[in-house]
Image (cartoon, rainbow, N blue to C red):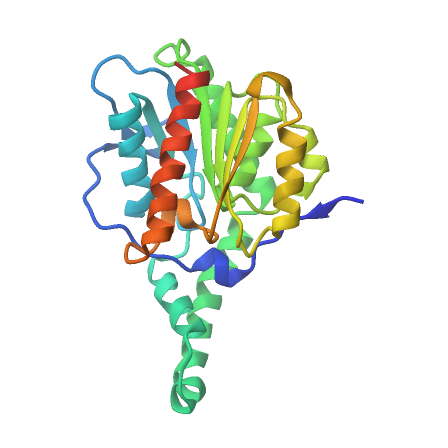
Length: 276
């Protein structure tokens, strides 16, 4: 019987904002506002990023896109697939405050306020970003990139995180959408059904304490994907890494930060193998 990975709101909405100033540009590409990170010299390939729940404007995915361009030599597109309907970054603070241990006064008087803030941010997101709305938008963008004379000669990769990981995996199930995929801590994918449908090279980064996918399922995913010959798929399990570590790691937590850096390297190495 198939079982689905689910991601709890606490894991989905917690995290930390990266410091730093993104160095890319913003353009309208194929009808969507898109952050563009451009490498020095000829691009090795094109990566389209599908962000986590906090969307394309947060510094976290933009800085990661810059890294893929600077260190990997890839042209990177980070489109607004949510059409502006992502929770504000302040939701992370509200969720952290809601979950933090507290005294009776804070629990009685402040935590209901934090809870309302989280609900006010989460419900509109899930209503406005249902599959029938978002999936066609993501697929149409990838089709346009592949048919665009400016980018059609480049091999195409998809990199999806948390919420976006689902769509990267769906793209990897198609015969002619992308050439390779990388995803970190994806959610809401049925096991083993959705994983057995993967057709394109897929690399997965996930922690062994991810609240969205129990470690038993993680090991099962690894078994299913790595059955393919020739190293076409890989699953790297990061010890002690939590959900969201690849994009929203606490900079004060050395373990989470180290795992994030290693996952970044994993993605670059994977795309160098299959796109360059």
